[in-house]
Amino acid sequence: MTVMSGKAHTFGDNLNTDYVISGKYKFKTLDMNELAKHVMEDIRPGFYDEIEKGDFVVAGENLGAGSSREQAPLVLKAAGIGAVVAKSFARIFYRNCINVGLPVIEVDTSNIAEGDVLEVDIAGGVVKNVTKGMVLEAKPLPSVMMKILADGGLAEHLKKHNGFALEDE
Image (cartoon, rainbow, N blue to C red; front, side):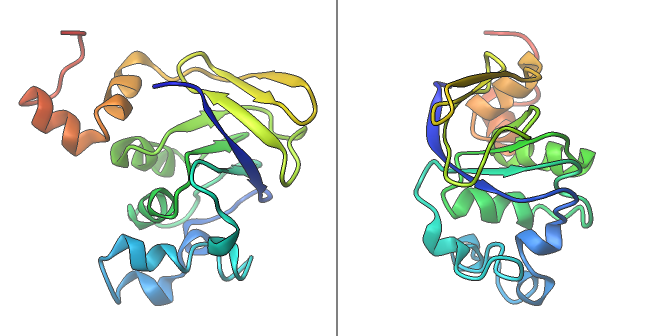
C-alpha cells in the first residue's frame, strides 16, 4: 500500500454509523454505489458531491459508534473515500473498515481542518498535513491488518490464502 493523498473532510466526535448512512436507506438496497449517494446526508447534505476519489473522512473521538453493520464502511469506500482518519474509533467500526478493505489510521486530528491536503501512510503510521506543513505520528496498523487491507479486505484475504494467513508467503 502506497502513501495516499487527498483532501480532508472533517467531522467532530461521536460520529455514529447512522450519520454515515441513515437507517432509512440501509434496508432499501444492497447496492453500495446507490447507498453512497446518501453518505453523511443527515449531517452534511450534498457531501457525496464534495468527495473526490481518495479523499479522507477525518473525525475526532469515537468514530463509528452505533450499529455494527458493515454498510457504513462499505458506503464510505463506495463513495471514494481513500481512508478514515480519527483520534479514536469504536472498536467494531474499526475492524469493519479493515474487513471491507477501507484503511483506517488513529492520530490526533486536532490540527486537521476542512479542506487540508493530507498524505496518509498507513504502513508507516504517519499523516502529513501538507497544507499546514505538519507531520503527525499515528498508531501504525499491525502487520496482519496491513495484509488484510493489501488483499482488499477479509473476504478477499481468505479467498487468496485459502484461509487466514498470518505470515508472509
